[in-house]
Image 1: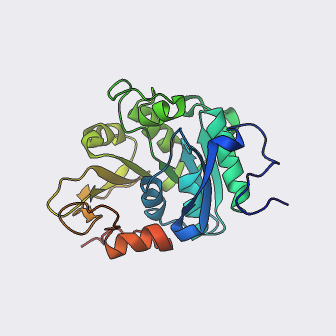
Image 2: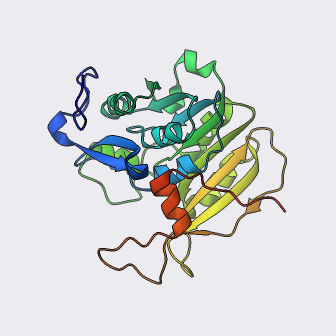
Length: 268
């Protein structure tokens, strides 16, 4: 029996135990092992998971799942999902399995390049696809010393491939949800043309009167509704950050700490 706070020895390979730290998400309802020096998740995968209106019994695919941060937050909020994660980097695929076991979740993690999925996976379809692709084009940011963080920040796979893969794996009327940098919205919209419809974009602004730095995308396979650009979700109170204080607005704090779903604005 694994003691609370210890890695699961039944999950072999991956990062050495001494290179990992255990971190709380959703107020401790989800606990995730993360590399001390590699890619470490912030609030982005939590917001992504909260944006997905999944229901028990649905099939969910996460592209580029890393250590499982997003799909485990989703699994905690919506029990009864059939979840598959795809991850290119072996150490992170092992870590995702370890994190799933640590949180008592039954999840399939496939180690593969999303641009060349295994045949078995190419023959399956999903009700929901989620993705948190690298925020930068390859070579468009300062290189990171850690390889895993380098790939997480700026992988070689174009956004068009991410969206094309998602569209191919979605069932008819299924949804893609993606979080990405706001300045990459033109690339996203271009890639969705002819593949996905009913596009909705929710900008995420750090503070009032500040430009959005991130966006959440919702797109539907076979959707025909008009494009919708929503008013931004403001993440923090106040005009600037104050040291040693948490300034998340109440509704955002409930998403991050209590696992409350992120409510998309209703159609008018």
